[in-house]
Amino acid sequence: MYRAYLKELDTKNRMASSKAASKLKAILFLGTVRENRVGLRVARFMQKQLEKRNYEVEMFDPLEMKFPLLQKPVHFYGPERTGAPEWLQEAEKKIKAADAFVIVSGEYNHSIPPALSNMLDHFPGSIFSYKPSAIVCYSPGIYGGMRAAMALRPLLSEIGTLSVSNIFGIPEVHKALDEEGVPKNDHMEKGAGKLLDQLDWYATAMKNHRNTAGVPQ
Image 1 (cartoon, rainbow, N blue to C red):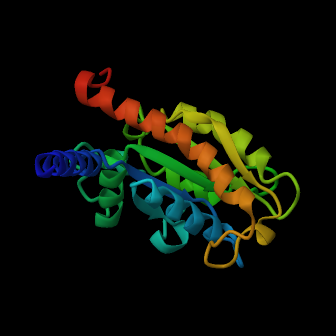
Image 2 (cartoon, rainbow, N blue to C red; image 1 turned 30 degrees about the vertical axis):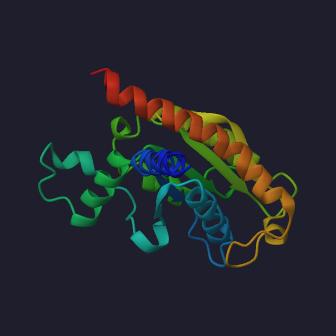
């Protein structure tokens, strides 16, 4: 019995070690800077959902990171990034190291918030490529920001991070989450779960293939 116990313990330890080694890295892009924004609630909720799945999560918040109105993206500083702001170079490194991206977007005039596209445009599409993305959209109305999500699909595909087929739309977002991102109904975790099931699969598969076969040059 003791040998059986040791064998079981060894198996559990190896599984835990494998899980730690395969931890995925995700960048969560928050796409709103508007006064009294509720997007931060959504971002906090999604960060918690990702962390429950063993993701290492970094949030890019344009209100905190202070992306200027785009004049010179990081790749315009040349291969050595000479003269590029240190914070921008660090942000680029984090995107390069990521395995997946989650885009949390409100809907401004039925389209993408300018702070979101401005933030993404500071980086070359090549560092997003061969990694999946997931769209989380929301609005105070009944459509859940879906028009912004439809505008995001081609943008994300053009920079090389194809979005998974599921979109997590949150209608009447102010009724769905409290200020700390705690859900007020069962729909939130179920909806996030369906989205992240797909993202998990693609992120793991793409990471494995990048590691074994590399990417086209």
